[in-house]
Length: 469
Ligand SMILES: [Zn+2]
Image 1 (cartoon, rainbow, N blue to C red):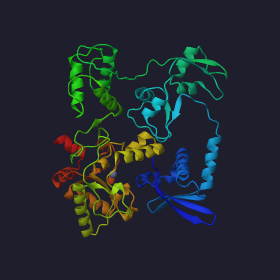
Image 2: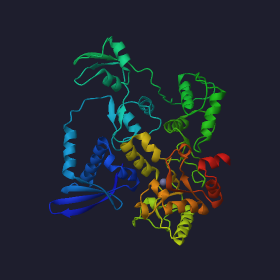
Image 3: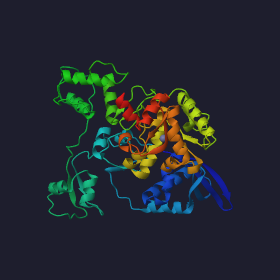
Image 4: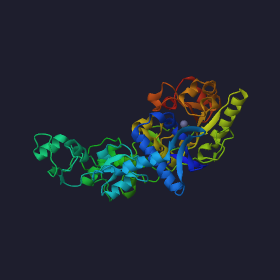
């Protein structure tokens, strides 16, 4: 996870000031800096410490200036940040073997391996619909077998219930407790969790005529993907038909209706991603949203830097766009200049991995659900298509902010973008359809100006347009 994209050192007589540059994508963060909660502040301080420890281990740091582009977001004393760490370390650690705090570099696969469980189990207990986790997230771990818990100082029934993923009522019932009181040293029985909805896909090859609990697991998995079939453990014609339909979605799979190792692999992957993966991601009309995602390995061909102004001079991946879109953007910007409108491009192509880093850091600050209102999960970002560009102006300090829509530049953009094949992808009042807040700055190239005109003149979204054609 990268909070910072770089740093600069400023020498002072008693040490250094480190100027840390926040990722430009964290504008929301900068806007809300004074309002961030204690937890977010601690996470941020931890991020600063980790960065300095890794990149500047031998520097005597006195203070830290956080920058977003040329904007000073905050100035912090490094001594205070170090004190904050001390307090964290000295906090008594409650030994809690059944939960785990996600660290940088963790994946569900790594965590499940480490604790001898499966990804599907972890997802089921933690109510995760996708495979995204974020740093600092507390994951419940499955109770492996019926066991005993010796009550420690600080334990309460509700804490234990949470820890073992049980209800307080069940804990009381199993242990014959009348009230809520427990005492230190008391041995409590922790019952087995037999009700976890886990899907363990079987190894081996299964086909029409096979039956048994393995076949049932396959049926359960398919139903989880949105198919509908009877989970009777019999590999009949319906199961075959649905396996065939599933295989048809992937080029790499042989379409034979037989479940084997390769189909298992793709099924497992599909269970982790609760949406459709686009078959033709390079289509200029590719619909990328919360229900339709790009393959994680998709990188558009012909990415170029459009010849338009950017607020930062150095090369960055986010300057890139697909060539067809870049040429159209150049024309749009040329027209803007002609009309005396000062526009800057700030963020175009974004790789799957960078979107993942951005989304992880936003989730860390806002929680997964809120973060997803303004930030896309990896694979669900239009920026990965190379057809999108975020546009801003000096009037709003180069920020990506809704007030841009009220400026002369924002209004000009809305009116003129369709003439060059672009639409404002997330219009006001269409949040329910697009799944995202109003973004007057986000341009999407749709291939030609006939289509963009048709979408814009109807005040529609790409979703609505594709529904009609
Ligand atoms: Zn955007």
